[in-house]
Length: 572
Image (cartoon, rainbow, N blue to C red):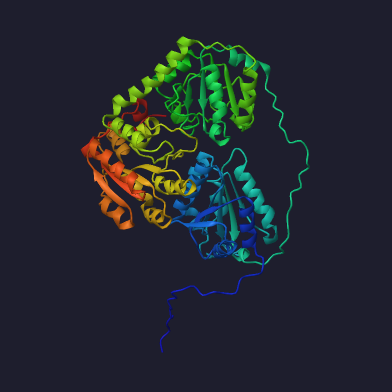
């Protein structure tokens, strides 16, 4: 006889007796249900099987199986951004958690409320260097580096307050991802089925806002006000209040990239995501009041924080650490944007306000000028942006990956009319667009979801195409294929006069897409793009339109001489 392992294929699952014991895994799922979690994205593993089985037995949570942990976190991230709900991702231990780390970093950058549940080595082996299966040297420290917070469960019977604390922290401003690591030997451990009840006194919960009278006076007196709207407007549901303020004081609105859709971008006073354009800089230079609402003033959107912000700056943010964070503020009003704007609008209703008609005209002209300026630089892609906006429904969700078409014109010329209808890679990592588009589509199934991606980044998570098919997520992928990392080609040639490692051998994307179950076609002109997008919309199935960038036209990108010089040898 020979030593041999017998493997038996089982065609159908075997029905087992229904579990009646209450375990740590059951307590985890109970807290997810209490938090109104409807979807979990993840990868099943021997280190999280009890949790998956508990979700299966509970029955109310949809389990989306990604093809990689990084994609699972991206999907949960996008789901949260598109819906305003808590995102939940579940991964395996060690290398599995590590695979999700890059995407958790993106979630931290975007401030998305997300709960990441991961396994951990058997509690008896953590830190012993015995190389328990999937063990990491220090998983908790690794997770702390990419999360708002990270916790390790040490006492199984404490799982309920442990989970409640993590969920609450993810949802508390500043929101962000929180990882909970559950040792494998704890997950199936039987614990008492006890209840933890937070008893809140039934007192008047109305919040009294204290806004200095000087704030309303300064707003009413301003003749050249500018509003800068960020994601905080969207997170607080304050778009209506923002519009009321705009219509009252007739101020132009600059949006951060995260703030796209906080005001309908076809509004005549919505300048949009053009903060670093010279026309906006000129407006700010002459402004006598800046009102910023829920925005970080990221460096990439403010010319490295060099934009001229007026001293008369009123900042509204729920996070007190926004005070003087990137630009000095005369007043920082710490509170929910919706409530604060309501109070401000109420105060202004009692005042006589006379907007400067000449300034309003100037602001409207600036709105048109930034768009004309951009169009003059991008050739046929201005027409492509117009075709997209003309053909796609108003409620389309646009996702832009880190690619030249995404961050030069897609994030500016495609108008967004509703909050939560635009998603982008806040942290700048390539290749996360595909799983994010899938997560957004699952979260908003009634809306079309369109992804702008480049060929280099797309291949990072290309395997998630089959997840879109499996989950019946009819996303439209607009893949701009220039045969490499286009932006890095430019930077290398501009800095050194040569290039390396940026030209890529690509698959036949149309054939690949069709093998995954997508419908697909390649387009080589603006007219063909128009027809291809129409076909994709009519299909109502996952569809990829591959744009031959060389045939349509190479987009000439140009950065500042100072930035190019930063790549060259230099003295301290």
